[in-house]
Length: 119
Image 1 (spheres, one colour):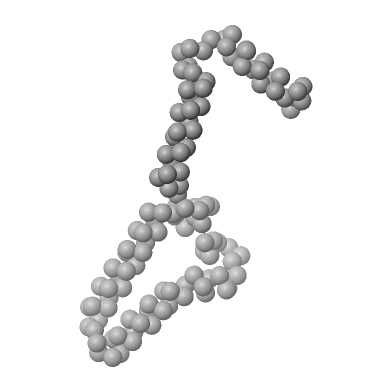
Image 2 (cartoon, rainbow, N blue to C red):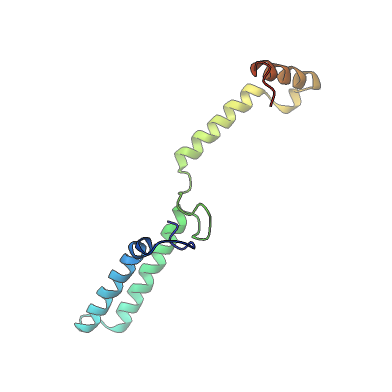
């Protein structure tokens, strides 16, 4: 959804704005056929735009964000990330349980895991 970025081709912009143009054409046709009053169409259009905006903001970051095309993580993804974090904390132990010797042992274990390939 990087339509509003510089150097975006015209086709992407037209595809992104097509629903808005379609809604505007429907609103104009309702006014021309005397099926609705101007007040009805204006309130309906502003209500639709407001709901669409807040629905987008609920699941995605703002359009000026570099990651506007990636949704926020779902609740299940957040729960699994928290569970992984708790498992990692349980594996490592509480910080009060650590001493300088424990850190040296952990660093030595990690350096042996590299097989002498220090970067």
